[in-house]
Length: 123
Image (cartoon, rainbow, N blue to C red; front, side, top):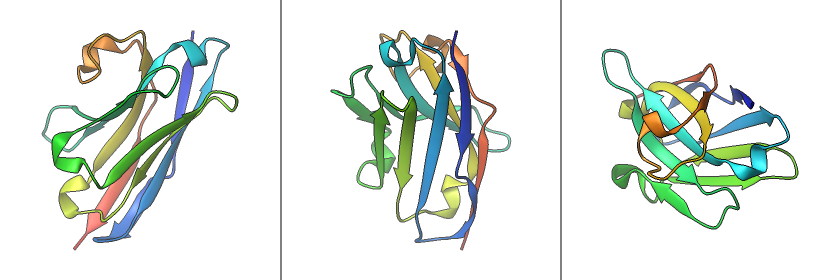
């Protein structure tokens, strides 16, 4: 069992940066792949980034490559999403997820989810 809690969201201006953190509880954190997803009002939840259990592989939404970086610290049970040059279309609730994943981009592959953190980007 893993419990996840996101933090770091907020309201920012376009062009600025945010660092989202996800704190996990549970002894098995290091065995799970971790992902970040987002959901804007009226839209489906979409993949943003993911990282393998040991941090050796990272995956990014194509349209966000170069603006986001995902990292994890298994000793601290945390995963971080660094987002730069934010745009108004990045406005969404951002969710952290964990699971034994084969296809990192599919939300259905993840077993555990946080409550989400709101990111609002104004122009």
